[in-house]
Image (tube, rainbow, N blue to C red; front, side):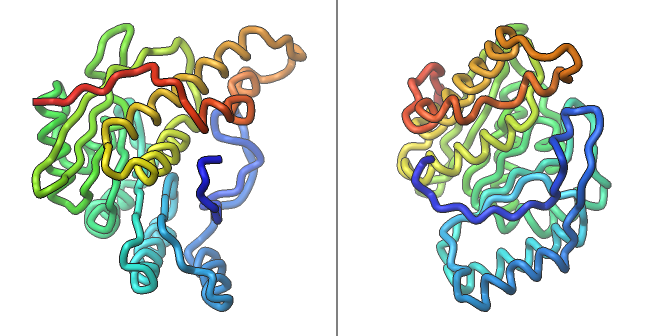
Length: 272
């Protein structure tokens, strides 16, 4: 929708997302990922400008991703790798701890952009984030591990009405740090983190020299999509047996205009 041609590889293929009570499906292993990549190579269609990774539940798959990043960069040294290190939330890790060490040692050092939530940032840095100052220190620690751009996509540093997101990007050798207050919505959404990282990739590509605007467009789009989803869940009359998760499927198709040209509804502030 934002002008980038996408080749998508599922790390898992499920009947439905895990916001539902039950699901069925398969988890790809490293060999299967390797087969798909070999097919791209055989046809010489493995020249990419960006690589984005999200949820990965297998250590071998994650290590294979490392190999692919390194090989893709032989083909295109300017490849931008965006890593959403999906490991947990709200103080709970829902992946084996061995994956954390792979992220720390092998994956984060290869990333250009990393988008953890507060809990994931704490896991990666071994630091507790309790206020904006400690969030700034955590972002500096993540910079020291490799990424030039760090966005803590959400945190509990806000209030009853607002979440707080923080970001930092290095230009001319020094970091520029920012904060955005994000209005809380009284609902739980599945897939919002995936959507945010994809939007951030696209807007940073379009506004490579304006980190603030890229963040404002990504967060504003999120607000439009989530508010439309929440409004839909309240208005649509569904069969009484329809699970609540079905009411909360993100209204992406219905939000295409907001994705293409979001009206800015949040303001990013520069941190001093």
